Image: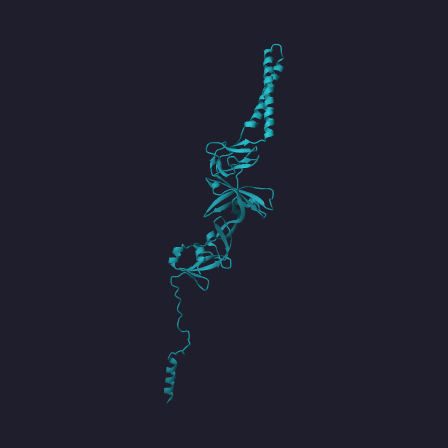
Length: 370
């Protein structure tokens, strides 16, 4: 075999594709992508595959995160209290037994009342000996009044010979006895009226017909339907001049509150702050004593990405995170750092870039996909 023949054979041998042995792969073939189908599932890298049909079913909605300069806020715990200018309490002045003021009976919680309206009567209660002493004293006063009236009549008949001052003294004595008789008689048979001090709605009623009450006992509480007051406790040093306003979240809605005043004395190492709002029906949305959380806005500003509160979820490691849409059917978790902004929004200050599409509706359901 000449040299030309050998050269041609070697060239043909190296030009032919090499076949892999059985059980071996040279990696020339492209790997096929997994077929995820139409089932929502959590992928090994932590992302979630969610088809479009499932996104519509659970109501997934995304919005791009935009950086803004917003007012800084803090979170304070508080409770609903009565407006001292528009609310009131009805207490018994004397000990006795309760009676209804009219045929409709005693007012109940939630009933509207008017200022000056008689809500109930308190029939005074006294012991047998005390009542006997009062009756005896009343009898003596009535007898003394009869004598005084006769003396006054005689002096008036002798007006020409008797000094005028004696006639006036006799008349004054009769008036004094009449007043004492009326006072003691009212104590034996009179009733004390429980009157509404303000117009509003009865928030609490501790009255039952026939109930025996003590003096100064609380019977009714009345709140104004158009006024809401919240007392919040600040355990850290707070410049009152830096407080701009506050908001209170009730479900998906938020109520704006203004700073009414602040105590100048600490109570249990905390400074009480009073926030209020006046609007139609706002005083009936929360009961007295209801614990609430206030988002207090300060006059200082902070930079971050405002998001709705419902966009934040918890990871299995109990970290705060949001879901970011990375592809039409792919969502990736992003741990973030946030701080309260108002009653319905938070301010993301770390872990998220502006422009990313964040899941604002359906995040809790998306977080449950495994």
